[in-house]
Amino acid sequence: MIQGIVIEGLVFGIMALGVFITFRVLDFADLTVDGSFPLGSAVMAMLLTAGVNPFFAMVAAFAAGGVAGAVTAVIHSKLKIPGLLAGILTMTMLHSVNLRIMGNRANVSLLRVDTLFRSISDYASSFMPGEYGILLFLALFTLIVLVATNLFFHTDFGITVGALGSNQQMITSQGMNPEVIKLLGVSLSNGLVGVSGALAAMYQGFADVNAGTGTVVAGLASVMIGEFLLRSNKIELLTLRVILGSILYRAIMFSGRQYGYLINLTANDLKLITGVLIIGCLVISKYGNGRLFSRKGKKA
Amino acid sequence: MIRKIISGLVLSLVACALLTAGGAGDTTDDGTTRIGISKIVAHPALDAVEKGVQDELAARGITAVYDLQNANGDVNTATQIATKFKRDKVDVIVAIATPMAVSAANSVRDIPVVFSVVTDPVSAGLVPNLSKGEGNVTGLSDKTDIYAHLELFKRIAGIKTLGHIFTSSEANSAAALAELEDACKKLSIELVVQSINNSSEVKQATEAIIRRVDGIYLTTDNTVYSALPALVEVALSQKKPVFSSDPTSAIEGGCVIASGFDYYKAGRATGAMVAEILEGRNPDSMPTKFLTDPSEQNLLLDLDAAKICGITLPEDLVKSANQIIENGKLTTR
Image (cartoon, rainbow over all chains, first blue to last red; front, side):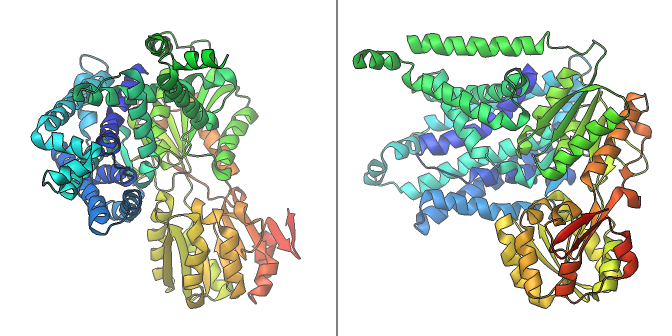
């Protein structure tokens, strides 16, 4: 169970990292995610079915997500459509694109295809439970993604991306084109989301066109829970806490499912439990700094 | 400071909960039968399957503890549910609808998985063919005989051009479409198809094609059925008959014929498979079950709608129906 939580936390943590880049670094509310997540799944599923190497398929999922992000950025900057709407438009269009990629099927099963996860699990099961093999692989994979992201944000360009989110005027006055920077930032973000979708397809054993529903919400919740865990402005900790937040988010979901019956809640109430638990986390992070208590004191 | 203490407390609480969950959570070896049922979303048809499974097992005198899980429409939690069942070491997993079935089969190898109402288990990779299960997996398909439906529809309503509306994001509907195209070709019926993404598009899609077709045929499509009243209204205003594959949603009236699957009976049949497995049968040896027997099917006729469309339903058909709507009143027999 705990390995299940960490595995899911890592798989969806990479998606949350993408959400973090748009929402927090670029300050761009990007809803493309709900479309680029199943896009990554679809690309992975179809390439695996065609017998392509899973790592190559992962690169393809990254590229596909990146293109989706670029479309949003272009709609936003060239057609002067608000960012929120641009993301919604791309997400909507991606629904049809995803269906087409999956050969007009809503659900592509990978049960008869050798996913990377299954071979890892089979290989690892000779000396430990197969799930731990997947866990180790994902931990390593996430570490590589984190290190690469951190390195990126240490380059001049990465710093510029960060600066754009805080002060667009400054970027313009430095003689740089904010549109190009935003395009690359949103592409990178959705590329990561695509990779996450690809991992999710291998983990779950299928790609489903409806898998995107609620992705951005889960990502945002993970980002915010991460902010509750660690307070810092170092990029290494900022990215790490997104992954930790994602793991805690999945843990909250699991606990709701596992222990909800103790207070007479059924599976139908799960979304409510998850929401309430997250609100609890956020309230603590907002007021926990002594303010909740001092404010009470002032009123009295 | 207080924040640190609180976040530390929360974290350690979560950690404790998870550690106990990982370790001593095994409560299975007390002789009770435990059955995990997962469905993709709370929906009248899927709820009926869930109930049917429990009723069938109860009718056979099997008392079991049920763990009823629901993905709340979020397919990303499908594996989470399968993992929970695995951890709880349930005796049998019943997975309702394709995504639940695939994720259960993908992550659980040592507990029997009985899928239910999966239209095409072979293309979902659940079983190699319909005549046997695979490993720990077997189940029931909700495939309807589309050819037989169209033959009947053609006979009573003289269909030459057939309209069809389906949801492109539903796996069942996409699978049924290929079969529908095939059946139309065999019966030399011209097919006009509209695809929709959500229930609010149903009315518009119907208006777009209704003048070009002689009638509308609907396969088992959850989204379309949720907007059935809108579809029926448009069709009847043009005096065009609607043939539905879901009698359950047709009891509100408007569909001239509704023939098909009874989800509750499907649940009972699934429960029977679960019972066989509990008695020691190996899922590997169990073929995919279909509901083909007429007693397992429902037929509903709306004589009022037929009158509007100028259709006289043959006497033998009316006799074989188990639900009839006449003068706005539903009689079940």
